[in-house]
Image 1: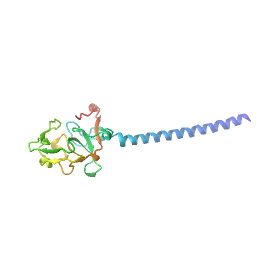
Image 2 (image 1 turned 180 degrees about the horizontal axis):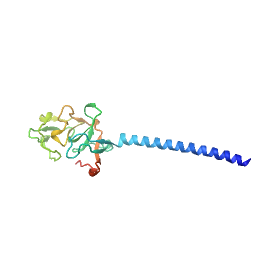
Image 3 (image 1 turned 135 degrees about the vertical axis):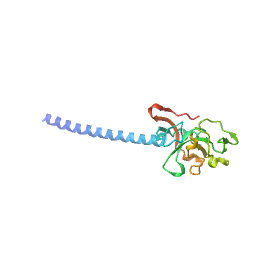
Image 4 (image 1 turned 180 degrees about the vertical axis):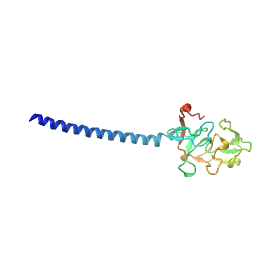
Length: 192
């Protein structure tokens, strides 16, 4: 009789172990899903460059990690490469910040960029700007607005266009941080 009781106890113990294992796996999967959600929404996300507007810095097809954390504790800086959705779409643009809040931006017909009447010293542009767009006239940025340009200045839809215009601070998703593909170009991106 005692051998039957041991068999029943062993079967019950196995069922309990299986239930514990299943519950453990459920909690583990739930933890991974929640952690992934938090990372993608508050820390960083993967994005892919589609187009040539940021050449030579970024190439069509580059895969990047956009980090979102630094802008939760500080403001974007001049020359940061940012990701944002223009004109309330689900599409994202990637451009470089040129003008900061409160500044006045103007681009001369010879392609020279002026910030508050002073020539901007920078070397990110692939070529001299041929079309200043709406920046032919001075543009004064609001206290939460940024002026952005693509590095491939003559092949970029950016703040010179009415379609994009000035980029509001709350529209900025994050800062392009590291290139993860192609493997031959993997590494951190130069901003400043």
